[in-house]
Image (cartoon, rainbow, N blue to C red; front, side, top):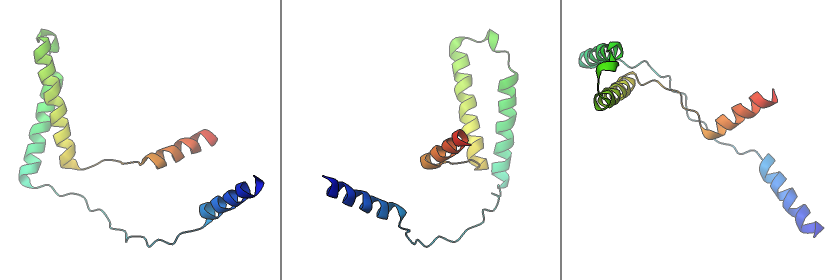
Length: 105
C-alpha cells in the first residue's frame, strides 16, 4: 500500500515541477484602430441617438415601447463597442489566481 502511493506521489511531483520549454510567439504591438469616414459618421449617429434615448421622458411610454427602446439602446451600444474594438479578456485561470492573491495578500 505504501509503495504504490509513494511511487504515484513521486511521479506527480516530477510532472508538476518539471519545466516544459515552449517557444513564445513574438509580441505584436497593437496599433489603434483607424476608423473610416463612414464608420466615424455612423459612430456619431449612434452616440447622438443614445443621447436622445437617455434624455427621453419614459413615463409617458407604454411597456412595449419602453422595451423596444431598451432593446434599441442595447443594440446601439453593442454596435458602438464593435467599432471601438476595446475590451479586456481574462481567462478563468487568471481570474482564480487574481482572487487567490487578493485573499492571501
